[in-house]
Image 1: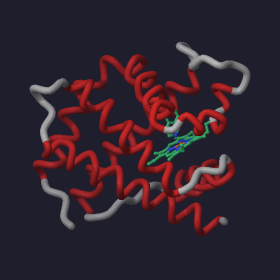
Image 2: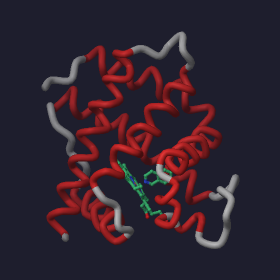
Image 3: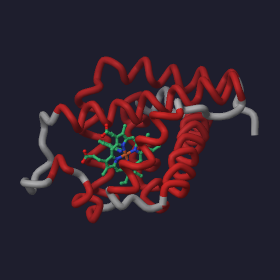
Image 4: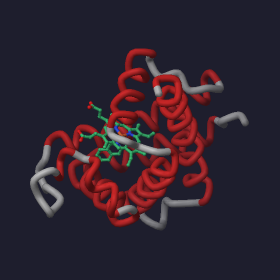
Amino acid sequence: MAFSEQQEVLVKEAWEIMKPNLPQLSLRFFTTILEIAPAAKNMFSFLKDSEEIPKNNPKLKVHAVKVFKMTCESAVQLREMGKVVVAETTLRYLGSVHLKKGVLDPHFEVVKEALLRTVREAVGDNKWSEEMRGAWSVAYDHLAEAIKAEMKAEA
Ligand code: HEM
Ligand code: ISQ
């Protein structure tokens, strides 16, 4: 399935709106993941010694922003090349991190839903549309498939 120029524009448009609010959106994203799947809590080192989600954990923020950014990059690559090409070293590393943490295929749907909700909240109902949802969705799915494939290759 080809990714259109318009889809790339929709992903980038949302990203521009998100940029000034990344610390807050990162927290929102992470909180939403745990709302959908409370059991995922034990996977994350950010929560090891606390019941509450840390409001100022730099690692949490950096990782969450990476997920946003990588989804945007995935959109650009899909448009330009028709496939997602994460640098081989990055992909290997992400594959092994997620494998080690015990991430399973269904978790990717949880993170996807949380990502889409976070983008929706960030851009607001005036800008949000089915097309924007579709564009983020496809970009995320391709990225997730690349990570899953690497996890399977390493398992
Ligand atoms: C760590 C990205 C999906 C759980 C990370 C890191 C990145 C990342 C960049 C940081 C790696 C590091 O520097 O150590 C992504 C992307 C995903 C994805 C792009 C999907 C396209 C998932 C899913 C789960 C998950 C589905 C399961 C709920 C984790 C955990 C860590 C992690 C537990 C380790 C965090 C820690 O304790 O330090 N991910 N991730 N990720 N991810 Fe993901
Ligand atoms: C790591 N992997 C996927 C999603 C995340 C969200 C917040 C913080 C870290 C993450």
